[in-house]
Length: 75
Image (cartoon, rainbow, N blue to C red):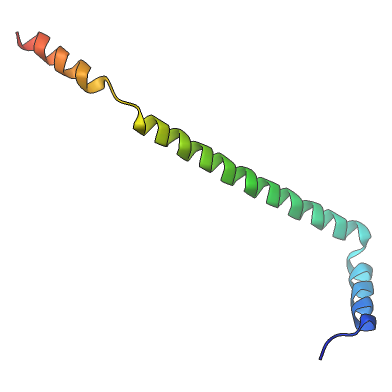
């Protein structure tokens, strides 16, 4: 059994009466801000993962420096 157009309009009218037009638009604004914040967080996480992957792929000269330092101290 599908709801008719009249039933949908009555439910919509009741929602508007209970919450008011301003309250509904305020809630939708909050939902939009939440979605925007979520997308921003995902983007930042992906960027930090890419940055750490780039750092891991760089050849490290630290091990070469340690061996030359240990050779200097040993002799």
